[in-house]
Amino acid sequence: MSPDDLLVLLDRLKPDLDAVATPWTLIGSGALILLGLPLGAANDLDIVTSAEGAGRLRTLWSDWLGSDGARVPDGPFRSDDFARYETPWGPVEVMGGLKAHGEPLVVTACHAVLPIPTAQEQLRILRLFGRHKDLAKAAQLEAWLSAG
Image (cartoon, rainbow, N blue to C red):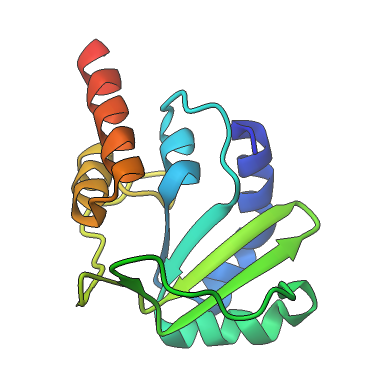
């Protein structure tokens, strides 16, 4: 998804997220693109919320729930409630109660306007995740920040 696609998707979903999934934030490539990092496109929009918020979204968005069944956790990541949705505006993954390396993911600093972590917070999260693809994105983000 392009930056414009991500903004449309976020605009369509934000009322539901604010109503039933608070607190919530975006992570991953979509969040980096919305920050301004020139990654090109994101495959989906990654939303982190509480397990309770994810459960309420599962009820609200049941018509969009992906039919691929439960997904095996990716390496050191576990969600108490994980779901993939195929919305009319693009794919979304919701991670309720996300844990990285056994510890709950806590996002400590968010952008003032968009529900995304600040650049420094995204660097921390990418390094915490530690997969090759996350570390590559961290390097891109650092180079982008250094270029001003």
